[in-house]
Length: 427
Image: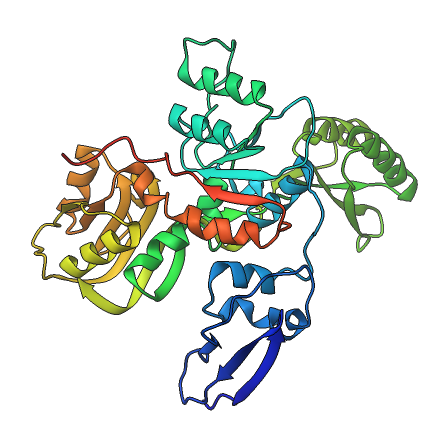
């Protein structure tokens, strides 16, 4: 299709920025470029006439991060932010409800004395080296992808390295937050970033995430009249005061009133007892479990049908480049060679065997799998690329840093740990 021609020049901080938008016949989004004069050295005030002009175009502009952050600033906070305000931003970027039920996500350490958040450190793992880095930069909030506190803690002592880190965070007045599988699941999160390393394709979710619903069960029963219905509903409301009961009535039968009521999981037992007590055993009662609504684009793992199939060898090179690694481990599927074609790829960041198991694809990409899990995949003709656990996740920190920084005031520094690294290396 034809895209429109847009050209112009606008003044930023005493210097000029020219915006050119070329006409092209293409099925893809038009390419927008921002060019500057050689002497252009922009500063980024809190408000400027360029913001309303260019802010809507920021997602598609190929710009340096400081300028992209500036152009996205107009609708975002400009003053100091406290911890709770930052947590609201983090929740919007990746709702914690998307995390797996077994995970330990959210705010793990909260200082007793509140202070403005001025420095945030992003890390894949919170280690002694990363904590030293955080202390040196007077960090206020550490966002550790992996939760440093995972299992229940009965004591905080120096003999356990994770407990020792928690104590140091408390003593230093630093908050610790972990998103973990909420980042994996969210649309545009870790797994979408990982699969993008192989090139564009038709991407789907392997393990669908579902939304939370206030009502999990439906009770269907009959009553004699409206008066009896009112008595039942009043008692049900007292039993489930935290959620709004929903009910419908069908009076097609002249002698009975058919009622359908939805209630929460916590109120199911008391609701059933109430209905049975009021209507008696002579009337039927049906209990149905309601399905939670799916959340399109959210969930664990990704499957990509590549727009441009590649060889196994090319897939290896692409992933090494995407992850910033010199080496990865490769297991060739039965009957496959490095020149075999990869049309479909399934990925899961971290330890992905449980998500990838049974998925039909030419290639699996994950951080780690056990010896026997690799053998299972290979026997089915699927090749496997392993990067080591955290190497399949760490690169997303750069993406998230930009997303977070553009939603915070300029007074907040968002840094990526330089001490964080996978504990394993090839020697």
